[in-house]
Length: 246
Image 1 (cartoon, rainbow, N blue to C red):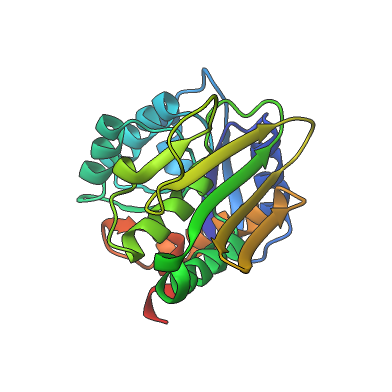
Image 2 (cartoon, rainbow, N blue to C red):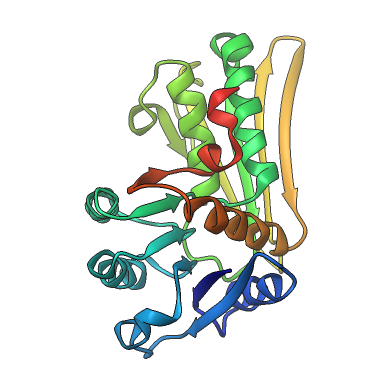
């Protein structure tokens, strides 16, 4: 049975992951981990670390896992490009599933967005709106950025050059090549994402709404099981779910 360490164990996501582990017959909780705990002192208690914390903490855990040959499932968002380079470097030595959203539904949505962009993307004004709870500190969400990246890559665009984040005041008319992002924060919203393709006379909207963190926990555990049989490398939930081959 696969033994899982869970960082941020006292937080809402950590609690949800541990509850989900307790319901599984394929994995068991090896180590609950919180700020101040020394992961290196408990390296023999787990096979895979699931991490949904913050970039600085994630990179500290990643360094320990890399030095000790432990796999890692990373759902943390908000990394800088320099921090992402460190994740990529570690993946040359250990297996890592790195995804801004572990939800099976969200990752299916990414595949649908790829198809929509192929069919109507060049003719549409594309806008992404996401909503999360009041305590989420990064915006746009990592999931919204991933959605934009999928659409931009499909259309042969560079998201860093075509993204517009929020709008205010009077400016030039909308450029058709732009991908717009808007963020809403409030209440206890787990995560809502809508990508709209606006065309003359019609629009297509692809929406995913999460009502429970359990969906992310289920995906993370599914990724942990899958990762236990993989060689060193950087993988996505698209790999875990086999969506890259559809």
